[in-house]
Amino acid sequence: MKSFAIFYEESCGCKHKTKLKRKIEEALLTKRGKGIARSFAAGAAAAAIPLALSLAGHTQKEKPNIIGNRVVSQVSPAPKKEVVAKQEPAKPQGLGYTDLAHGVIKHFEGFREKAYQDELTKSKVPTIGWGMTKHSDGRPVKIGDTITREEGDKHLASHVEDMRARLAKTIPHWDAMEPHHHAAITSFAHNFGTGFYGKEGFETITGALRDKRWNDVPSALSLYKKSGGVERAGLVRRRGVEGEMWRGNVSGFNQKGEPTYKKK
Image (cartoon, rainbow, N blue to C red; front, side, top):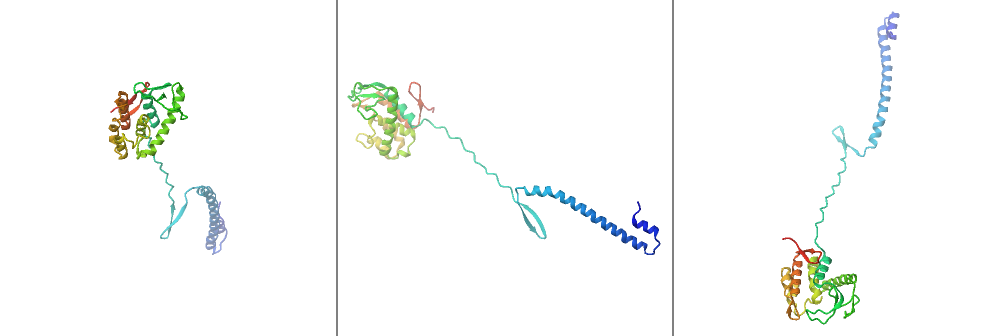
């Protein structure tokens, strides 16, 4: 189809037809350009909506950074991930105070459900259960008294804890000792009483504990192996086990109740 300008040119002989043609075409082009511009603007606006929504939901904030006459987009860095340090697994521990103290006392004392007098030491003090000279309520044991295994175990447990509390108050550096140290001294105190520290006749073990000469404790324990003025094989063995326990070498007790030792 011919344009309006060309049609006019063909039908009009006016001397100004060329100039008029150019003005008409410019007008048409301008009108058409405006329409195209409007169409382009509408399309661009429609395309910008989802982009704006996407940017609005973005977690990163942009801050303008002006360099010279240019505005450069500067995106704040993403937050650093917190690095959680790996926890090292706890190192395996040996037997605790209770197991060691109960084990060594039970091994050397043995359980008796009926009160008896020790024929070997010629002691006139009746003993019952795990080598107890008093009942759990404080009554002295007398011949004819009986006790069950369950009652004996409970009595030993409370007796051991009572000894530990008493020893902690009288022996210096107690808190600096390890559980196996406490167990060895508790077994020794079960033989000689919790008041042995500082008592006449116990100068060697007292000095080692007082001066924190830990390496001298086993040899000091070994000196106390007599009963009634006579060296007893049972006490020699007991002091030896207590010495090894003090060194941390006792690993447990077997089914027979005998102490077992760590491999060297």
